[in-house]
Image 1: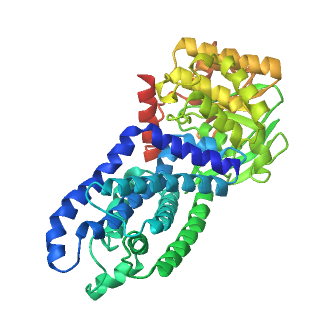
Image 2: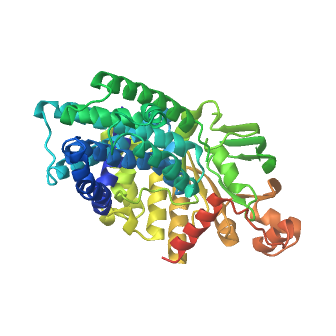
Image 3: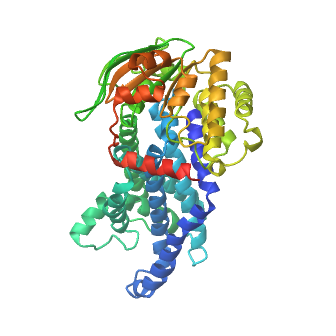
Length: 248
Length: 263
């Protein structure tokens, strides 16, 4: 247990010590809230969608968690190249514990990031519908974080260097984000986009956040929770397996 | 203490280590010399459980690193060729992290860490972030860290590469002290022949994955009828410059090494 804890703590210390990273990674969600939020707001309103900021904020929170989570998983590549991973891998500790500690640490950091974005969204006028549901919102944030940190770690265990990172960003992370319904409602979409959105796990994360923060769930909170939980478990197993096979 | 028999490691058809055998006695200082790409680091990685051998037997203090992995891991300390500290943590936190990974009880851990940080003369800088340290300070800290869990043997992969003569001499003094006072078995690789000659009791020369000579520095010089170990080394391995293969790992490692050297 202390092994998991110390690895978790390391991730948190690294995060809070790099102020530039904390602030830098808030830039993108703010830009989305302001540019996209206010830019599409009037049209959304005219089309009868209601207040766009209310709709968009859960999506932007999910987005920032997605990016931080994938990135902190992918950081394993960095550790692989720059030595620190070797120090951990020669210690008499199971690889499974290492993977779990790291993933929990990365997921915690990403969740904190999501909470910061939620706080910032109050400035642009976002208001949660139901204060009592907010803790459940945090749970969804953590699930999204865990899922994508595990995914990042699984990918990082297989990749040799950062060259593949651009590939992941453009062919995995961006589609995951844009097709998740973070920016638009899932109702009445062209069939193919609808199908793709329904197999994108982030859709259920965004939906869970919408359900808890603005009562606007499309799939329903129960299904959201089930899908996120199941995919997270699978990815944790796959990630741990791939991680345990790392040879450097 | 360390026994290696007919060890071979192949990477997709390329033989990095080719059927090598050697023995290191308890308390011995053993140097592993060879040109770039000769198989030194691969051998260390196999000995320290980071890589599995293709074939052959390895025994560390009676433990097979592929089978009794955790026991084998507890028995050695290692200083890697590339820096392996966490830059965003302080010197003390890096040490503490190691102690916890090796499951040392708090009291014992703290005492040991204090003793070792003092040993490498970094006590007054212990709460600084490692990224502010010079290459030499990092190296000293890595030596200290490798010793926290009281290993019986210490592996050092090019421990003095890119360091100034002062730091190099300091590091060798620590290592000789450890060997003398605690009877620690030392296995190291280096490019600096004079270091091997001065420090090592036994030397093996590896080239293209094969061990081509073993013995004391004196024996190697006599057998090749040369005056210095450097000449002996050149007679044994030839004069041709070795180019390391430029895979992306190696490329980054080199860049990083250069970077550390000129900082």
